[in-house]
Length: 351
Picture 1 (cartoon, rainbow, N blue to C red):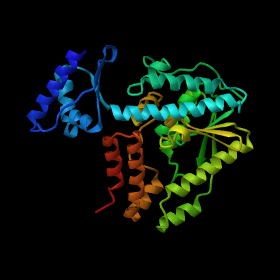
Picture 2 (tube, rainbow, N blue to C red):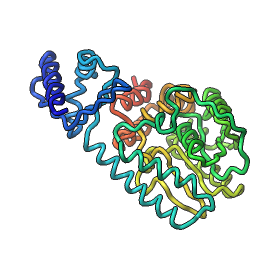
Picture 3 (cartoon, rainbow, N blue to C red):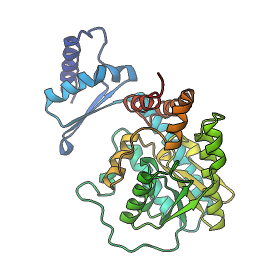
Picture 4 (tube, rainbow, N blue to C red):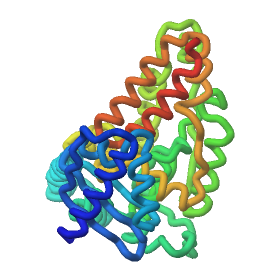
């Protein structure tokens, strides 16, 4: 393998010379090849080394893929892997605390989550959820009926993050009820509802809409008083936990990517809150791969129609959307290229 690593390193250096980038030294820590997927994983020591391997606009790694005749090349920085591993260890420690305290009667779903987390920690840079749940070679088809006695609430907005959370919660045996706060089409448009309803139908998971009056938030946003995402998120969370308390749900699952480590699983007033993608150290690409397999349709741009209209009227509001994108990029949930696309969609109103 060492010989292969040296050969690939030499190829990358030659490709960089072709475009006049000889000054950057190419460092590779490890090479992993997965024959079944025709996939090459290149692990570099740090992010600048990763950038050197990828090249401007992905040109170097694209040419390398052609040269080697592999289907896919994934480049990861070891420092990012270390951070992800550390966060998952923190999440595991917190999860073990909940398991030891017997907060809920049926602990099997949490045990299943722990097993999945441990497995992902073994391979944090290239974990395959499709293989873990044996979903790769066939579309999902659950022949079982809808189960009753739901004890877990999953906040479902129709995007890839919350869709991933519902799918994984269902596969882990949490027996979820999908809950969607519905403030109207300016916040929850039809294409999000289509994703919600088709996914729940496929999984045979019961789903409910909880109406919400966002008139004050909408009016204040259109007057430029604040960026709508903060007040909107706060009110959605209040509605979800209010429903959980009134209907005796002991676990609430969100698709949050940012509250990693110890903050990814918390307890408040007898309810366990799990930010599932954050707890599992999931990247946006992993989220998409699972969600798209289950028929979730891609939603272009960033945020809801309300946010788009507010940014159009008050372009300076885009800075707060960009801050959110940058936070997800710093956390490792978004790759720089993905972040650039989202930032570009937020900046389209600037002249």
